[in-house]
Length: 232
Length: 125
Image (cartoon, rainbow over all chains, first blue to last red; front, side):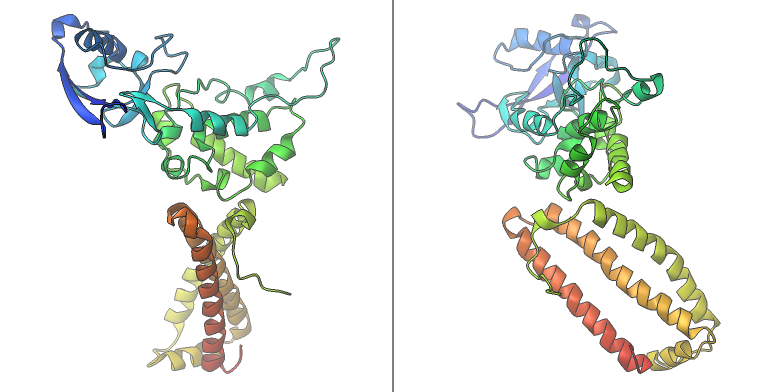
């Protein structure tokens, strides 16, 4: 099995370049994941850098571009990738080294949508109760693991990562906009009402296609637009 | 009312533009086949002037002219939002406001030109 991996060390390289590695099929099993292969390649080339933490699709640290699509290496089976696998860092953000990118802008945008509940002052005698219907509105939004696969597949985010929040942040924004316990509903909508924010999304749905958790940020952004039209 | 020709990205609306773009699209969706139907029902016209004369002498010309006036205005609104968004996305950041101002001015000239053409063809605006 052949792996073409993008390499870049800012201390020694002018630009990223591709390096090819080979793994014998006997080293891999039918249920091997891409991350398992990367661990084996790193035994050949210890300087190869990539992130991984939980190694089971929960932490979202090992996002990378695999054969042109953003994926998590730990939950991507080698059997679905063919004999030649091309690995690049997630596109659109600065490369720190090899497959590791600087996600500062991504987190800045996430932070900017205030991804936390702004509820009435906590009454220790009572919980912030929701009906099952109100709670069900949060399904499909709270499961995001912030891997960045969606935002780094979005052309609007590539072009203006400092202006456009990106699908991950807007998915989070939608999660708190529809939360029945949140008291800053209208303020949140006003802050998102801009041609360089929510309305910069063109719904090409790269984000939905890339999401390793099967979420639908494009639909969430469409919902945000509908809520703005009805409520602002 | 003072017309602002110096367009700045920060002052542009997201939601309002979104609503106007969809409203204008729906209107033009119905107006375009209506216009095509009206023209096909007319006797053959040798020139644009004759076509305008025939249109202005329809039994329901008042309704037609009002519908056309609304269509022209909404077409300009639709074009403003569509190309505005393209400029915001694609123009170099430093010159976005300049391009928006140029485009906005161009649409105003187009509106004035449309009024002059209407006066010329129909004899009144």
